[in-house]
Image (tube, rainbow, N blue to C red; front, side, top):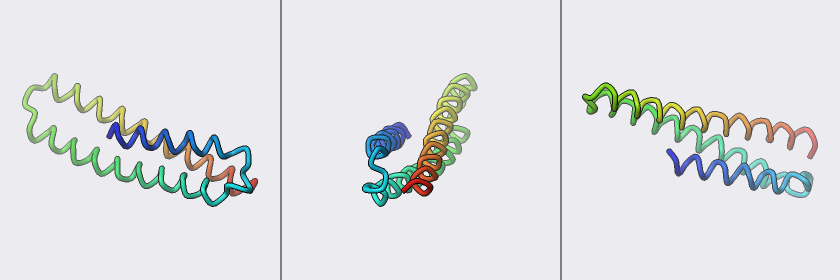
Length: 96
């Protein structure tokens, strides 16, 4: 999930770099924001899969809670990336 998070943030950074010339870069901006949404969906799948694995395999309750909390934080961060991409997509649609 960390690789997805890194990729999402790189795409958001690229969107912010292209934003000053919004009309010229509209297609690339929309493509990048769509990719962030797809990465977040992939993260949802990984989150559910890893959570199921944790509950099936990890017997130590402290370890289980620690890893569950970490996965939830990563998932929340990916959700915020998607929200940011949605906001940026709205800006592109409005001003391009």
